[in-house]
Length: 180
Image 1 (cartoon, rainbow, N blue to C red):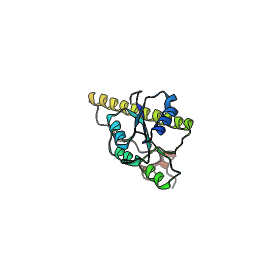
Image 2: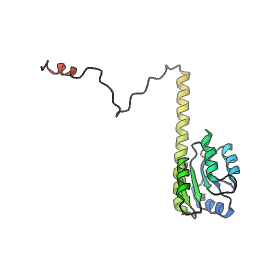
Image 3: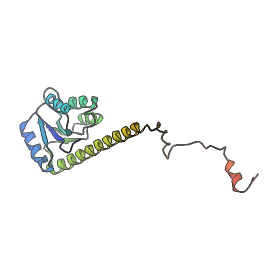
Image 4: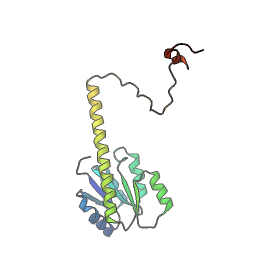
């Protein structure tokens, strides 16, 4: 993700978009805005979105619908989403949102400092993830170009049970003879 990736703000109320822009402006990242779920999907498909702040309840294509579409597409699957709701904690909404991989569910009005902290963390984490993926692709391409042999299978994790290569007790003969 380029360092100029946008933070996309989506809400059908202009006053909420203005409040979100005011809260996030100190981050110094470019901010984008959309007033509908359909408009948000179009902007997401154009790329260059680092974090999405999304109203859960909008006419037409709502927030959860947008997230469902995002998770189906490789290019938008890993974009962090903060879902915004003006309603008190709705456990069904929360459960559905977290099942879809939403990073957080925030009730509005929001605390600007807390929101900036969350968004900065999500943005930076996503940016690091994309940089690591790009580095991995580059390393794989270099290996392929060098004609490297197929990779050996990875060793088992340290906690995995690996059967011994010798029968039980075979190592005791090495310690000083047979003790039978």
